[in-house]
Image (cartoon, rainbow, N blue to C red):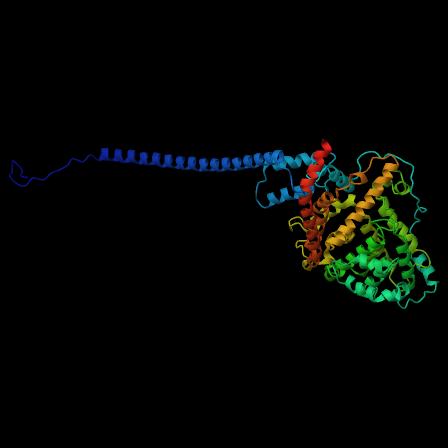
Length: 553
């Protein structure tokens, strides 16, 4: 392109307005700022929406869970027993907070409701009565379990006692006075306790059975009782404590110990179907197994005085039992119930009556060379707490405390690891050790749950017969017949065993084996018997429904 004037190449020139350019730059900058703020606002809105979405999802999940829980409670029959106590639930709630999570509000409200009730028992499963009476076991079984574990809430109906009883227990004499009397007496030699009590023709069989008793979790105590009539308990106890080594270095007067053992044998009525010397022999044998083969001694959870106290507790824990339970003694105002203010009258009597025998001159087997008064006191105190702990009304309190001490995580437990090998027993609190001692006797007391099934069933039906006899006494006295004790309504054994195993037996043995893993064989035996009862329950279910329907018609 040429310039028309000069005919030279033209130069295109654009007019540039700098003021206008600066204004445009300023406007653009402002626009970019606005866009950035809008972007940030949108991002914040997006974050808020994501948070709200998450909150709504969580809320929806909670509502779905609550709805499902309501539907389950309304339409689904509960098949399991909830053994959690208010303390268990509170500790679980606190653990959730400590771990950094937020517990559901509903859980807090439920805890508040439970803890604010004046009749809440902190060591008893929440809703125990409702669970037992409204569960699938049946009302009679539930009432029986409730009476055993909680007692009869109604006022006792006083009747004239019909049971003969000894004079009231004398106060505990001092150890120094008792040993002084013992030192003045001449002990007789007992070369062979077995030879003195058992027919020579039976000695080989008895020796074989004794060898089995020392090492078997499923000892045939009935066979042993048939081979040692009248001396079952004394022979077995003497042999097992010898085998355990607990008598080594004790310098006991074994002659007087044998006198004491024979009097203990005589203190159990052979006509009582269940609470007789054979039952006590089985408890002694199971105690021996738990101590010597279940990890108790190996763990050093007990020293020698406590071991002796535990064997002694097993020996006397049902001494002079009349085949009638505490509830019967209380509602008939029996002298034992009056003496002990309705608080575990049988258990208190077992200790007191056996102690009176021990203090007889020909039975006071301790000598001045045996133990110090402090060690004797330790053994006695151990035995007392163990025997009183066999009252089933204390079951949940003992088990709950044990689980809180030994099964809980370190965040609120004095003992971090459950297996005994990791525990420094010298650092365990005395009250926690006491719980271990109590659990040993509690497990041994119902040790037939782990026996072979035929032996276990035999014990179960012996107990049922003892229940029926109490029901007969209640009928004769004009009292309401206790649940499962009416002879005219037999047939509840299978259902009652299912309830007892699931609510009492399995949790108890599980708790012990969690701490002492060497005792696993006893839990295996319990679970095997539970499966037998479960199969029997399933087989009898249709027949039971048919019988109930016929009864209603």
